Length: 451
Image 1 (cartoon, rainbow, N blue to C red):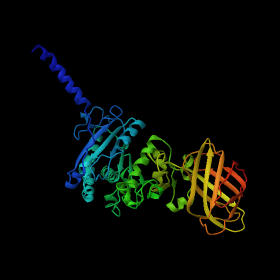
Image 2 (cartoon, helix red, strand yellow; image 1 turned 135 degrees about the horizontal axis):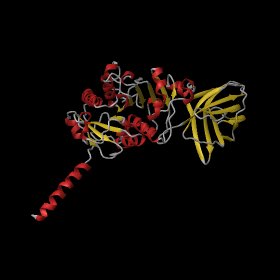
Image 3 (cartoon, rainbow, N blue to C red; image 1 turned 180 degrees about the vertical axis):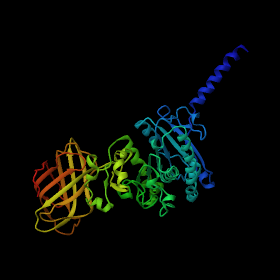
Image 4 (tube, one colour; image 1 turned 90 degrees about the vertical axis):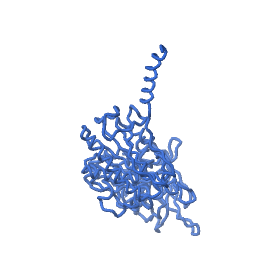
């Protein structure tokens, strides 16, 4: 009896400590659930700097049930999309922790896996409305308890992008920001604005498209719509069905990986506003004077630096290309070439930058470029990495026709200008390029005079 009197309080304390350390995890279902069907349940899991790796499930009726939920902080909601296998998103933990690292905020994972895990995609689409109603009610409760709607950021992936839009519309567009990562296309394409995401759903709506020819939405939906690699066929993703599941989801999922990279600031993907991907590749959209000293907008988390200008422009389409893997971003240069050959030539350019033991490559081969005597040919050169101090440049000209005689391109002037950095352009004068032969030289600062 004497021993029990001492053990009982100790056991009670142990139970309380265990309860305090219990973490709520994202719902993990299986393909079995997808086949038999599930009924929608929406769970809200809170992460903060105080519990960055341990989710706390929030009550839909009692906000004080989780002390870490501080409404004076900004709140970011992460809303996943269709989950046909029922498994948790592989990117969820990384995205959550990077958001918390960037700012002292509440990150709320909207777990609607019961409702998204269904082989019947149409059923999951139907559940987006119900999930949005549930989330709207919760945000209204936050507002009643002092939260500012302008400090709310919703990051919606695929179907989650349209859920964000539904919530934003119900709140009359007062939510601060919606970031839509490859919004779902099937069952939303061609629908009126009330049935999908649109720019009026938040004070600022930024959208990334990576799979517009399959699972994603093709047309603009926000104040700014970024199209990575034209919105289709992401580099490094498999091109044949024999690659298994990656063939179907790689392009679509790339949107999240690109956004994650913008959070960890590995590098910046500067996008060029343009009316089409073709014009972007042709180098017709390299002037960003409308954005002032800030230059062209950078894709990702920090695009809010351009928010005021973009909202004023109403809807902007912007393009950027990426590498196959992280770091995904490329460096944009304008390449100007003037030749003095008597005959007009058509061909492709490969250019390399060398410096401090590194090499960056840009291949301009989306179509044959036209080179005409004393006429400046302007090209967009996108290098796979940054070379802070260029010591040498290598360039190769080719026609792509192995059966015809080899040409020599007599270059009167080559000029290379970084589109973002304010360095003086690099030039070289009087170069002879033999077809399919790499020519290397040391560049010099360009002269002030123009041809």
